[in-house]
Amino acid sequence: QKEVEQNSGPLSVPEGAIASLNCTYSDRGSQSFFWYRQYSGKSPELIMSIYSNGDKEDGRFTAQLNKASQYVSLLIRDSQPSDSATYLCAGGIRGNQFYFGTGTSLTVIP
Amino acid sequence: DTEVTQTPKHLVMGMTNKKSLKCEQHMGHRAMYWYKQKAKKPPELMFVYSYEKLSINESVPSRFSPECPNSSLLNLHLHALQPEDSALYLCASSQDPGRDQYFGAGTRLSVL
Image (cartoon, rainbow over the protein chains, first blue to last red):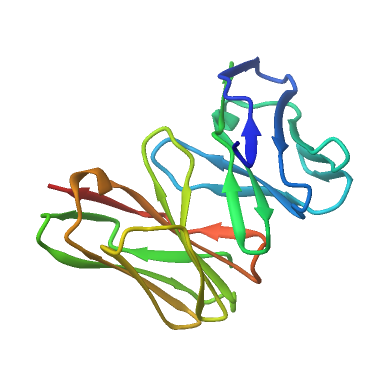
């Protein structure tokens, strides 16, 4: 069983729309969650981290954590073509352990 | 400043060679990580150093040998690699284990 599961996509949205990315995790002891963006041929770039239940907003990005449902999501408002990338969900599990989901490929269509 | 520097950017080596990958951060982070990433796959955790001590080794073959000379530096020594070890090797660091990780640009390794 994978520790972190993610919709593999691909996901396509028109420019200006909201993109919704989802992730579930299996270990209830997980305490920290992260969203990374990775452009082709580049390294992952941290977008958001979230540690407690609820929403966390940063500019056009909102991360949501629901520990009861073991669910993490990322909303991208006013999507831009430059947002086209692979988005990786990651969870900090059992202290130092850190697992990535398989990633969701997002394409924003101009 | 969230910069993690990795050298070299590209490396080609034969199966009998010995080489090393280097990683450096000056953010005062106390945890450093090595990942391996194959094309169209997520990064896979290889090693974790916490406060300069190896805390996690994810069943990585002994032909990969990590070293943490001090709190700012992390090396990955490579010996007798196989062609299937060709991948992007990523270094990351975080303030403390389990916190936000920041990645370097990676070393793209090809084993011939």
